[in-house]
Length: 284
Ligand SMILES: [Zn+2]
Ligand SMILES: [Zn+2]
Ligand SMILES: [Zn+2]
Image (cartoon, rainbow, N blue to C red; front, side, top):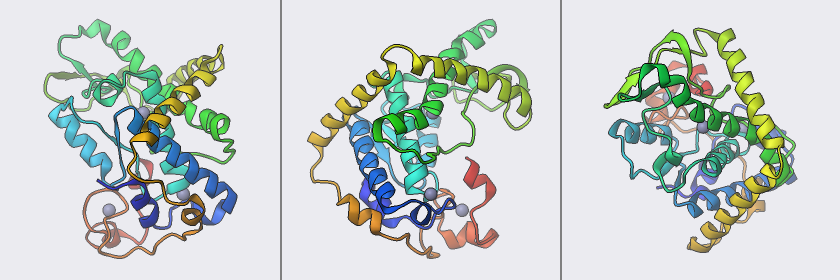
């Protein structure tokens, strides 16, 4: 498994061109934040996965319905600052809102587009609501927590351009894993307007949650506590944030793993299609 420093050192130029568009101070702050969140996930007993095909590994665990899997895919494309950091924050908010004693924060692997077969059809929406609400908080919280916790006022991104929700009531179907039944749902590609309406409503619920009482302070305290535990277990210090922030992106070589996360070599994958990563790779 790659350590965080390997991902930072091997990163190639990202589509958002973070290295050039953020100042050195902003990049240093970003690297420090990445370290804190890496420690936090480890403090909860998860293993942030820096392999560029971490999402493939997660999907394999999902197919196996592997309740012992502790990997968390955090790397989608080569971006360190906006996207790796955004993904780490997203996952830390999931951890705060979920059950860290379980794989996938206690969210069943078959969700969101399928539910366990024993759930009656009339209960699908209620069954999926906690999943949707957790996803809305993790989605909306990236910017809010990033700003409050680290003072980052630049745009942080996650792997997707919209949150992943399963809204019952459409006709889209995705094959489920063993023991699960597919849920007919409103799909963000095929029903964009209906999806966007439902998504903004649940994100509004998430905003109210973040704004209420001590929620924000509580979220940050839990991340900090996990981070302190993770830091204690770490064998060596993280690499100097200033040195990392000064390191320019590497040039893409054909033998490097492909930027789309397919697990193929770049010259056997996206390099043969075009010189840029595919639109699909960027919007996952
Ligand atoms: Zn970037
Ligand atoms: Zn999520
Ligand atoms: Zn590729």
